[in-house]
Amino acid sequence: MRVAAIDIGTVTSRLFIADVNESGVMPLCRKSVITNLGEGVDASGRLSDEAIARTVEQIARYKEVVDEYAPVDSLVALATSASRDAENSDEFVGRLRDVGVELSVIPGSREAELSFLGASNDFRGEDILFADIGGGSTELAFGRACGSAESVVPEIELHASRSFDIGCRRMTERFLKSDPPSEYELEQARAWAIETLAPFFEEESIRFDRLVAVAGTPTSVVAVRDSLVPYDSSRVHKVVVAREEFDDVAQRLCALPLEERKKVAGIQPKRAGVFPAGVVILDAVMSLAKVDGFTASESDILIGIVLDALRS
View 1 (cartoon, helix red, strand yellow):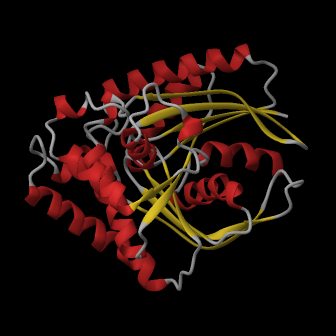
View 2: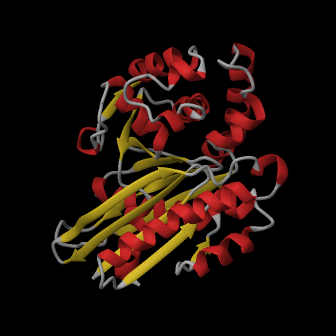
């Protein structure tokens, strides 16, 4: 079957189209645009008119791309943290319906489940700790994907998963007011991240083979470390980043003013503003997990949506 998946996050709107058969998932198209739907939501509790307009415009373009790949057996469009938080998300859903896209605003638990399904598929048989650092929320999960290589959709043993209302857009707007962020602001942000995420590690007995991190923060760390211009997902996916390498990238970029940060090879200019918050959250995850690095993954909720459509 041919599946189109749209993921509308707090910072980024993404499209993934793939054919799925007994041989596995064959990507046909992947697009990602920073639309910042969740800009200001943490303070106002509402999606702004401007954020809705630019995101709807982008999703309308994605729908045109989907139509170019017709026939598509399943089009699944999901929205996450910003839309969950906003009191006017129904307006956003209605605007997307007008352009032919039926949107589901999913709870954090469903987001964690689908994201883990997508990421763990590449590490079958391993116990993994999974972290998805988004713009408005962070999902943590612990478990494993099982099944032979001949099985397209793995069986998931998900031992624990939680979604936390902490993300790089939310943290930036709450704490990181200076340019560049001051040491005090970064310390306050890190303290909030540690306090928020600690219960997951305190309540669960977690033994794992690797920490797998997805979303724009960990992939950007790899891209900056290796000066990837243009971005090459094949040189990011499943790449291991040592703790000292992460610390070097994080400290170097957090010390730069925004306009200088935008010029760093490997970072999307539109992501530069929330990148310091993202590395603060990833740093907190590594500290709480007591690990000396992470594995970056390009397989996330988009792959999870596709695999889930196949088993539905």
